[in-house]
Length: 478
Ligand code: 4AD
Ligand code: MG
Image (tube, rainbow, N blue to C red; front, side):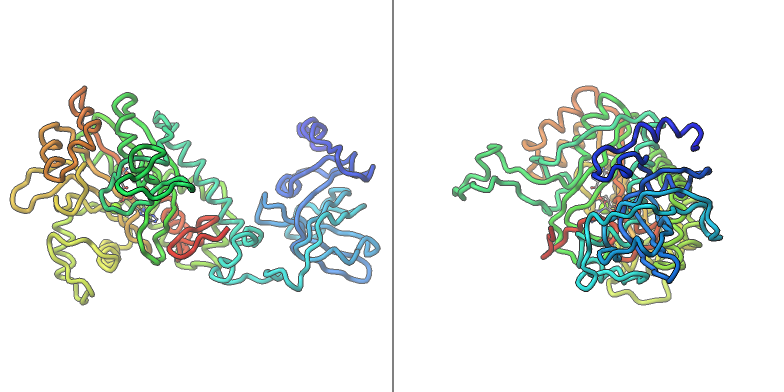
C-alpha cells in the first residue's frame, strides 16, 4: 500500500480506541496522509474540525492536527453526521484514503466511521470557520490561538527555525552550552533584572536572598558564561530564554524572549563576528524557506505583503557595514527631522535605525565601533583617541531595527581590571578577571534576538505574535 511505509504504519496501529474497527486502523498524521502517494484501505486520522459542509448526498469535513497548514478533506455519507460534529471539535475519522477528484488535493479520506472525541461549543468558541482574525484579536486567547492557521504556521516556522539554528552551529563545529537561567551577574550592567526569591522568603533588612546567600536574578544574557566555555572549546553557542525588566510596551520588546548567542575564541577582528552573523541569518532563513514554504507564503500573502521582496533583497545582497561615526554623519545630513537629534555619543534611536537601513537600500546594516561610554564593560577598547570607541557591532534590519548585538571582548587583564575598578565591580567580577589571567585569548561573540528574527523573516509587526506565551509589562497570561 504505502510501499516502504507499511511496516511503519503497522507498528503504529492503535489499540486504545473502543470501536473494534478503530483499533485495527493505522494512524496517520494529516501531513502523512496528504503526502501519501498511494491509496490505503484502513487508516485513522485524528485532529480538530476546521470546516463542516453538509450537502444532501455528501458530508465534507476538513481536519487539521497541526502537522501542516493544509487540512485533510474527509468525504462522508450524511448519515455519519451527528450534532457534535462542529467547527473546533476533536474527532477521529476512520476510513479509506482515496485519490481525490478535487484539483487542489492529491488524496482525501472516505470516512467509514467518525467519532467526536471532544465537542466544541461553537457559540462561545472565540474563533469562527473561514475567518482570519486580526493578530491582536487572537492574542487575547493564548490558550486557543495555536489552533488558528496563522499562529499554527508561526509556531511550525519557529520550531523549524530553532532546528535550523542548532544545525548551523553543529555543522560549524560549535559546542552547545546550557548557560544558567538563574545567575548572580548583570551581564549588560543596565539594571534591567528580575530578582529571584523563594515564595516564602520574608524580607529581612540587609539580606537579599537566604536561598543563594547572594542576590540572584533571571539571566539577561548567557554571554559571560559562554566566555568561560569559549576558554575551553573555542566555538560555543547557547539558545535559551532571556529576561529583561524593561518597562517597554514597544512592538519589539518582551520581558521574556529567546536569545541565540555565540562566542568564538582566537578572533581578532570584528569582521569574523560579522561573517558568522550574516552566514547564520542567511543559512537559517534558507532552511526555513525550504522546510515551511506554505507557512512563509501565508505570512507574505496575508500578514505582510511587502515582506517577500524585502526578504529576497536581504538574502541576495551582501549586508552593509558602516561605523557608528559614519552613521551619525548620515543622520545629521538626513533631509528629515528626528524627534531625537543625532549627535556623536548618543544612542541610536529606533527612528535613526530605520533611517540608516533605508539609506543603505533596505538591506541589513552592521554598525560598528560605538562610543566607549555607551557600551557595557566587557567590550574591547579601540584606543582611538578623543572619539573613544569600543569594538562593538549591532546589526540593524529592515522593519525591526536592532536584531543582533555583539563585540570583541576585552581580553587584556590591565584594561579590563581598570575599567571594572572604575565601575566598582572588580570584586564581583574577580572570576571574569581570572579568565584574563589564565590563558586569555582574543575572542568575541554576539546575541541575536530570536523573536525579532522571526518578525524579520515573516514581516510580523508585533513581537507578541511570534512567541507562544508573551510576557510583557502588566501581562503574564496563563
Ligand atoms: O544587544 P543585547 O543586549 O546584547 C547582549 O545581551 C549581549 N550580551 C549578547 C552577546 O554578545 N552574547 O541583546 C541581543 C539581542 C538584541 O539585539 C535584540 O535582538 C534582542 O537580543 N533583545 C530583545 N528581544 C526582545 N525583547 C527584549 N526586551 C530584548 N532585548 C534584547
Ligand atoms: Mg543591544
